[in-house]
Amino acid sequence: MDHPLVSHKLTLLRSVDTPSPVFRQLVEELVTLLAYEATREVQVDPCTVVTPITTTGGVALSRPKPLVVPILRAGLGMLEGMMRLIPTAEVGFVGMARDEQTLQPMTYAERLPGDLSGRQCFVLDPMLATGGSLGGAVQFLANRGANHVVCLCILAAPEGIERFRELVADLGIRCTLVVACVDERLNEKGYIVPGLGDAGDRLYGLAE
Image (cartoon, helix red, strand yellow):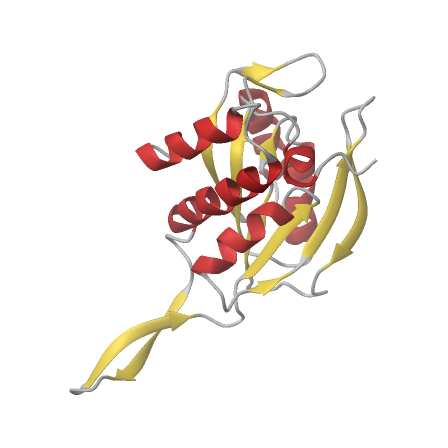
């Protein structure tokens, strides 16, 4: 997204001096800005509304309701900012972790409807680094029938975007990626450069 408020909040997020409570607040604010763009094609149906003056036409969110899916644990920090914009959406969870040796994603938990046919899903993951976790989550949703998946990320690496495209290319569904910023590259440990560090740790601490 090309917006001065997005750039300003992202600059504060990058700073090593930003403490966890402020980091969480900034993520929430930034995600609300991202969500505005991400929901541009949210599915709606025509409806009728009674105003204090007369009756007129409008739109309402389509059913089944949109499903918001944060990828645990860092994606939880993005949930409140997303739900602020679409509070009637339902929420599911996918737990994925990266094996630090192979850099491959591992699924350790999920709480999602068994049938997502016709469902529009919004996946939350702060960092699109190697692309495996986000791509795996989209594959998971597509296998259950989701027809349009929108992914929201704060930062992305070019390598991660390319890998993500490869993973979702043959799924046969619409897939949109909305990011605040595309950074330079990944380092040898699979972290985004210049990045902002480990988003989960900065949100919630090391939890060791």
